[in-house]
Length: 288
Image 1: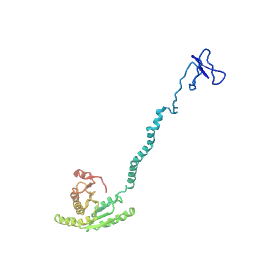
Image 2: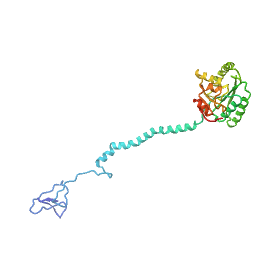
Image 3: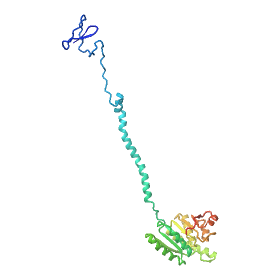
Image 4: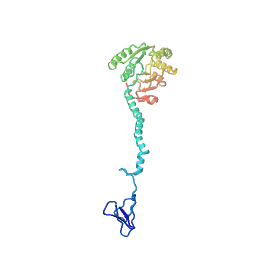
């Protein structure tokens, strides 16, 4: 038992819970609810306040509220935000891959309908040399030559037989039209025969509807090209006309070249002197 003597507290050594007051001091009993005192009776310690135990990571009550409040919600939303971002970026990553795959699968040029105007002698030989450099994409090939030309058909068939060994699926057709002008024919009669050849070529060109017309100078190419121009003006079929001047023309153009120089889409010459005289032409060197 503890007793207060006015200046200090004393404790009885005989029995637990009993105290004898100091000599000469009044007997004052310590209330049962008094706080625990230290070994130094002259020091009165206040009761310690209860403080919550801090978490091991530090931060106290502020850190606890941060993890359990909006901060915890943000941590939970981060994986969902990353997943949503990946889903949005996935199409952007797939589009380039799809374009590359399409480019690889679509490298092959689609079929191109080709109309070739052949002439007698050297014109047919030159045009066949030029055709030997073309790929199988130029198919079918429609050959047009004069009805009085007996050599061109044999050369064309021989050329196509050899080509079939490399390209088995190649296709070709042969067509004859009236000759527009014979050798040493008068100019007045040439106009009449050319008009007749144009009237004959127009339905044929409309039937074939070629994408590309290739010619190298025979008189037969004039009515065919004019027929193609008429179909383009009528909006039926637009054909690209490529005229390749003969290798034997070094300083001047042929009569067919002088006419088609103003109507062809591409006019190709094989000598630099012709390029200087005709600026519209394209000089590629010797190509046949």
